[in-house]
Each structure stands twice: as C-alpha cells, then as structure tokens.
Length: 251
Ligand SMILES: [Zn+2]
Image (cartoon, rainbow, N blue to C red; front, side, top):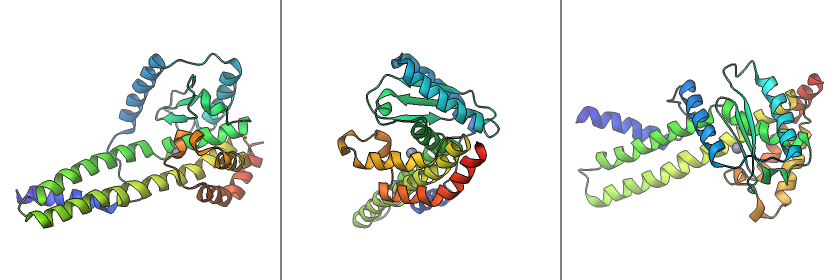
C-alpha cells in the first residue's frame, strides 16, 4: 500500500504541476492508426461537399502544405476533405488528415487565408498536441483517483479541502494554460508552414482581425479555446519577419 501511495502521490503532483509541454504516452503510429479510423468513420457519417470551387480551394491549399511537410511527415497518407457543415471549423489529425467544413469558407476569401487556418491545424499535429492532450487526460484521471485514495484516512474537512484544491488545480493549473500555450505554439508554427508553402503570412493577421469583428455568436468553434485575439495577433506579428523571409524564399 505504501508503494502504491508513493506512485499515486507522484501522479497527483504531476497532475497539479501543469507543465507547458507535457509528456506523451502514446506512440505516433498508434495515434495515426486511430486517426485514420476516425477519419474513415467521419467520411461515412458526414456529407462530403460536392461544391467544385470549395473542393478545389481546399485541395489547392492542402496539397501545397502537404508537399512542404512531406519530409517532416514521411509516414503521412494525406487526405483533404470538405465536409458539408455550417459550422465554421477545420481540423487536422495525425497521419495527414485535413478536414474543412463548408461553414468556414464563408469566412475565408483567399487561398492565403485558408492556408493560415490549415497551417494552424496541421501545426497542432506536428507539435504532437493530440498526444499531449490525451496523455494529460490520463494523468488527470489518475490524479483524481490518487487524490481520493490518498486522502482516505484524513478527517473529512481536510479531505474535502484537498479534493477541492485538486479539482480547481487540475482545471486552472493544468488544463487552461496548457491549451493556451498549445494555441499560441500552433499560431506561430502554422504561420511558418503557410509561408514556406508559398502563402502570404500577412493573410493570417487579416483573417483573425476579421474574426475579431465578426459576431461572437458566429465565431468558429475552433476559436473557443483560443487565446484572446489581441494575444493571437501580437504572437503572429512577432513571428511575421521570419514568416515573410520564408515566404520570399519559397517564391
Ligand atoms: Zn488551435
């Protein structure tokens, strides 16, 4: 029991620490396989758009980004799908799966702007954020179990205090800054990916500024966990000189 308590204490501390990068427990090939299966399922369940212009745009932008990232993602089996869905959303999955929803295209005027979004989404993949998120979920779950067991012989007031601290600590300490840091990392890397693929990185700033002015109710889902737009635009501007250099070099 004492050995178990030591292990659990370790997990609890890890859960409360809330590190910025986070450990990864899952192998990349396992995640790719899982993502492929989920993507297949999505294609069965959702309607794939037949809009020729939208499809052409998604293919044009995604294939150039896939070409750029080829050497960095040699195992990827790239797929780009435009789904018929009014929500303004896009995501990428390990293994090179890119999904864009038709609702997003209402906000996107140029290839450069779409590249800003796809660059951001694929940056999450390159940075192993799915893996870190899932691993953080495992740690958090284990930490919760640990807190319950470790406080078993305490009197109930102390115990409730610790469990409450755990609940709050794991939310604010681990989950929130973690997501924000992921978003900010993906913004910066995404900008470079788009620029290296020959898309004007300045479009990212224009796109997010437009989003800023859009009706909050109509904001895309993928913004909900994102940092404030001021923070985002500051991050992008900080990264812009390097991105412009890469953009020029790509042409
Ligand atoms: Zn994101």
